[in-house]
Each structure stands twice: as C-alpha cells, then as structure tokens.
Length: 336
Image 1 (cartoon, rainbow, N blue to C red):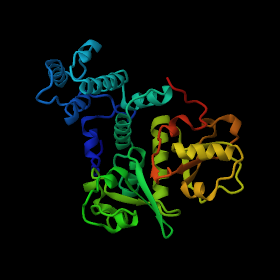
Image 2: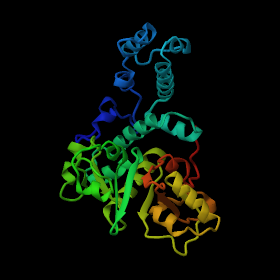
Image 3: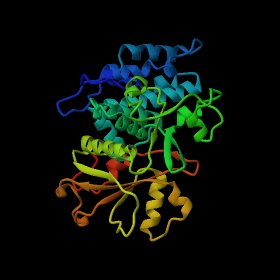
Image 4: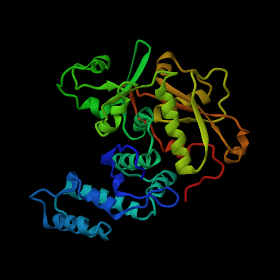
C-alpha cells in the first residue's frame, strides 16, 4: 500500500499486500481476522466443540473444517453462524486474490450474506483508491458497500449513511437530521471544501453526508469511483459522466446501478413513460463510453451505455456494484 493518508482502517486492508498485478492475495492474517471478530468469539457457556474449533482456527486460519465438526456445535444459532463463516472462508481460499473471489461470486451468482460481500467490496475499493486524496471520491465510494438514506429539500439532494441514521436514537438534534425529517440524532456534517480534510480521521464513522445534487461534485465523484472499479476488475478503460436527463435518447444499452433503477430501465426499454413519482426517485444518470471500441460489444457500434440510479420508496439507496461487472456490454469478459 502507498504512504498516503489512511482510511477505512476497519476493513483489514493493512493485513494484505498487493501482487504484481495490483490485486490482493488472500492472506492468512486477513482470514484470521474473521475468527477474531466479536460475533464469532464463543460465549462462556459455549460447547466444547465450538470452543475447540474457534481456538484451532485462531492458530491456523486455513485449517480444514469438516461439516461434522460444525454439526457438533450444540447451539443452533452458533452452528448456523459457523456454517456461513466456514463456507465464506473456504470460498476465499479457493482463489488467489480477493478480486478473483469477488469476480467468481458475480460471474456465477453465488449466494453469501450481504455483510460478507459488502466487506469484500470495501477492502477491494480500499485497494483501488489507495493514495486517493479526494475526500469526495472516497465518500462517494461508500455507496458501493453501505446503504444510504436520501432526502431532497429546496433543490438539494443529500445522502447520509443509513446505518448511522438508524443508530441516532436520542442524540442531540443536528441541522442535517432536521433536514432528513428525523426528530433527533448526532451531529452529521455535509461534506464540503471546508471539512473535507477531516474525512480521513473519521472515515470509519461514516458520519459525513454527501451532496448528490446534479452538476455538483458528488455525482462526478461517484462516476470517478465507477471508472476505477471497472478498470481494476475488468481491465477496461471507460469514461463515465453525469447527465441531467434522458431526452431524445435511444437506449441501445442501459444498466441499473440498483434494483429500483433496473426496474425503471426495463420500463423505459419497453416504451413506458415514468410518472412524476418514479422520476423523482431517479436520482442519478450517467453516460458511459469505452476508451477502446474493441472492448465493446460490436453490435452496439460505439453507442453510449446509460447508467441509472434510483431510491426505493422509503428513500433508501442500495447500489449493486456487481452490476458494473456483469452488466456492461463488454466483448471479452466472461466468468471463469
């Protein structure tokens, strides 16, 4: 890793090195960190089977665990947690790098808990963005692995971390919480030029909101993150820029960045017209073009790809970065 300012310390990137291709080999210490998590530390009344397996894995994070060993755990909830954890550990170990493990999940539609996949996306992004000195780009990258809560007020579109918002409880009221329509909450600042330098020291708190209003830095920063993501995982160079609206545009290829936007894109493709409510939930539009036409599906003749981003009915935004891997009209990529 570079000697730039550090961020997202909790993702475990400091336990990893890069290979010659700039990717992250699956390190023993990274695997061991999973077993040191509080959720997996057996309680005092845990059975001998669980305690013994946990100790053994702390000694050797790659130790082969038979299904019968997990099945011997008495507590049903603990047994289920360990089944999920061992399946995830085994998946990571089957691949040389974390990126390869992620591409396999996307390419083959493998099912794992969202929390595991989001953690994997975060550490890969930490690698992709190493040395980045733009706080707006780093904050925009959080949308890839943390759901957001959005609000529109007086022409401004703001997104705040959903988990942070939900955990507010009865903390002192802040101006942004008032704007979000919540009664109380801790202080959350909107990222701006004045406080951008504080991002690195508070990056693991996820307590900075991002302005996604059109023609401002938020959407442009998100486009930058998507460019880096595609380049790192697919070795394809693209340009992604925000656009104000889709007017008199022939959609030869479109991509929803989330489930809601995918449904809207399907409706537009079928010739339907989005009503005002649906249009208000469409909070981001981007145009993607390929730097090298040879990377693109030859049937599209250089036509741009349009990316769409939309909130749910309750104003949540849950991006699916895997769509940028599996959904682009790329000629040469296929899961292995």
